[in-house]
Amino acid sequence: MKHASIVKIKLIFSFATVFAVAAGCSAVEDNPDEGVSSGASAGTLSGVLAGGGASSQTAAQEAWRAGFQAANLDVTVDYDPTGSGTGRTNFADGGYAFAGTDAPFTAAEAAGSFATCASGSGLVEIPAYISPIAVAFNLDGVDSLRLDAVVIADIFAGRLTSWNDPAIAALNPGANLPDTAITPVHRSDKSGTTENFTDYLVQTAPTAWTFAAAEAWPAELKGEAAEKTQGVRQTIAATAGAIGYLDASQASGLGTAELKVGDGYVAYSPEAAAAAVGKSSLEAGRAAFDVVVDIDRTLSDGDVYPLVLVSYLVACERYADPAAGSLAKAYLEYVISAEGQQAAAEHAGSAPITADPALAPKAAAAVAAIA
Image 1 (cartoon, one colour):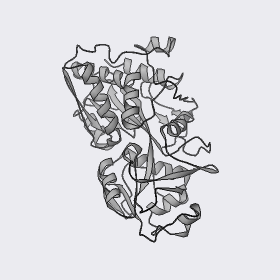
Image 2 (cartoon, helix red, strand yellow):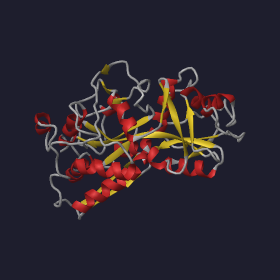
Image 3 (cartoon, one colour):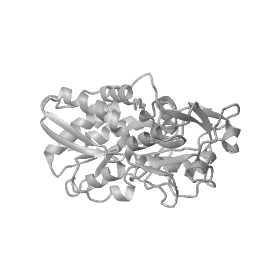
Image 4 (cartoon, helix red, strand yellow):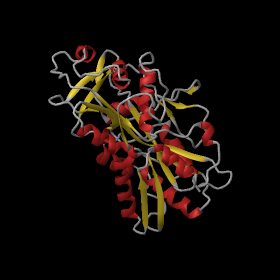
């Protein structure tokens, strides 16, 4: 997902504070450290807000929905974790008032029309959830391994078939690796997590991984296919020798890999994921309220974990149904508030998007533009 033209805006993340946004665009630009409430109309809204998409957001959405509905007792927020591709399709077709996606609409797609939006409306896309993608496995007696991008590519391409292969052993001296067969597990549905995982392989192991970065897994590759994040987790947990990729919030209880970065290895963590995003750039050629990060996965700094996803929430600048627009705006205000970001961090282990001079005002301005 690299692009030829990049705006080199450094996105600085701090874990001393959580994401602070202002009540309106101009207020954010004047004083980006001032926070907002959980919605300008908190407590006065009513109705059902329907959304869905990225299954990676499942745990975060649970926290966001609970917090928002506690402040707005007459609102029900429905989020169906159908996967990023289905989420974008349903939003475009008018089935969702908002969508979650680990792979944003392309700039060309974002310039199109959407049934959910009023005629001529622009698209709003904001980064709302930053999380590492874990390379997780089920190997008896082994809780952690060190892997580099070439070995990961060779495993998922089917070139390495046993856990005691010399290529894996060389990265893990002293590890008691069994001769168990390797079973790669991938998503069966169109998935933004798959696009982020394959983008990591494209950027870091281009000679070993000759497939494109895409939401659909290469059809010619073997392995076990599983639907959504939960399906991948269940398949890995039930299959001795399995290895797969999934949002780290769902990796508890599985073995996980430290990834080769520069001259060392880095375990996944919210801090290391945010560091990778913070040292990346905003994608050029986007409209003002289409805020997309172009992740540089080739960074060699020892504090970054490059296999990271930035998951987005998608909305309209103007809605075909104004009532849906009011609900969507209030909900997104809560999601990017200090309270909402902290709730996701505690419930899903994500990295709170903190106040910084580049990303935070842009995200806040995008939400403020919703009408």
